[in-house]
Image (tube, rainbow, N blue to C red; front, side, top):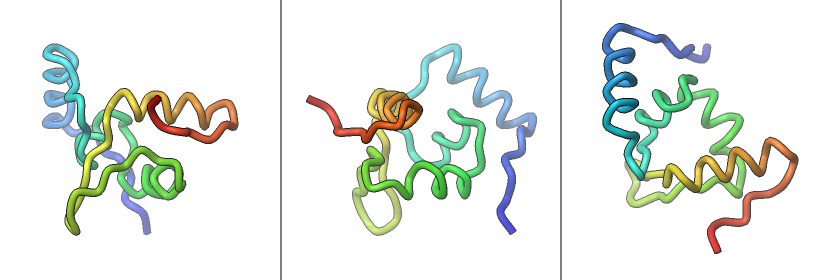
Amino acid sequence: MAKTFELTDERKQQIKTYNEIGWPASLTIPVLELYEQMSISTIRKHFLSRPDAPYIKFDERGGVIPRMAWEKFKACISIGKTYEGEI
């Protein structure tokens, strides 16, 4: 069964800190989970499974997502378009 996103006190503090100092320019999967406030399984299923997702894999263990590219990606899919990357 998929794990749901849980907003613990620690996560609330992390979100508050990021909102005060600014979110990182490159989001790891755990930071993306906080940023979107969705479970990782939901993000993977609905967003990262798409071939146009702006996920940059850097080794076998993980990767990053440029925050601005993520916002543009979400805007594209919200209107039914395919994200074509940065110019």
